[in-house]
Image 1 (cartoon, rainbow, N blue to C red):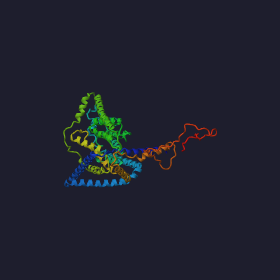
Image 2 (image 1 turned 45 degrees about the vertical axis):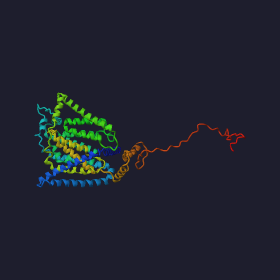
Image 3 (image 1 turned 60 degrees about the vertical axis):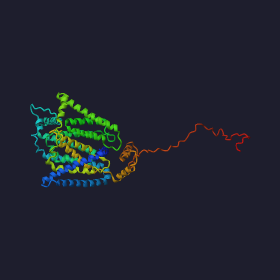
Image 4 (image 1 turned 90 degrees about the vertical axis):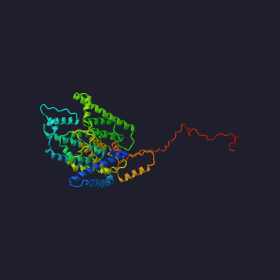
Length: 524
């Protein structure tokens, strides 16, 4: 029974931490610009997909506009209905947090099982022996691993060589390495999104990672993308979940420095790692409902940038020491690998073979166009959309290499945006709490004093467990901890003690008559 009680208490603390750890940013003018960009990107994807679909069916291409309008209208109506339903049952969802957590975990396990069987069905048909990475990594007499400037390729070939040394030059083993790396990275992405944007958004992203044909095919081709996917998700997991003390005041200074080091390492492995910098900065500047010292935020940013510089120097020094080359030659080779080639819009931004799933992904992203307005004063898409814009801009300048094309990372970013857009439809306060918050905001509209959010009722109820641990009697109902009265209390009456002693009446009787002379006329 004690073990079950501890498990229940741990589960309760975990659900509370998930609810409080959501990453939000305060809405401002920049947020509305972000929403406009999000709407333009989503509308462009829907229009492009509709045009291609109509052309494949022999229809006029202008019918793609009708397809985009229908998808946006359907997504808007569904988002409104989901939000109304979530607002009406918000109290129930808050009371049944553990049930929702268990149900979501079971759904995640079902998605992993479905993804495993989808990949198991396609493993036999994978064309592995024709892969360049298989030829580079297989164990043969006199064959050495070639030195490459690209870090992701070098580490991936090393990993495959180690697997082949243990299990033989079996090409199928390389495929299973891909599947394990993709499953591990998808699990880390699910855990990060569950804490930052909720269970519904995490399940949507996990569904695409496990069941989308593009992701299934990516796990059946030997490529360093899966290894880099796992490394970047491990770094993202630490940046968002490793620092437990960053819920109210932001991440610690040591966590900011180490986050910058991880950004530098992932960027050294592949230039796409620079996108993780948005995650660290977003963690620093996210909205927490209270005023955080601006000097602390500035110091956190400086420490993060210092970590990036120190991480790059450490990677260059380690590479120069292992390869026996000079550090300036190592740095020059890395910079020349990612040198821009001029502005050029990629001709093949999407793959036509996966047209249905891209259309579904675009339709789910359309939920975010409307769910952005459901929460007043908060939004959650800034950092992710800036990452997508950075990947698109870098792809237009030809920064990415052939070994690591930008489409895979861009697809993952769109999957995260689709999950956030759908998850915001299901996040709502109970109607009575929303009305009270509106009344408070209206009542304090003319006040110049900053408004402080009231403490969570669950925090005040935690005193019941401490009372039980101290052996004090408990009643059937939970005993709340009351707030301290901020008003000054009246002064307590204190009995005064005489500093002198009175004579004992039994020994001496007091004479209260004062002698007065006869000629005194005071009474006239």
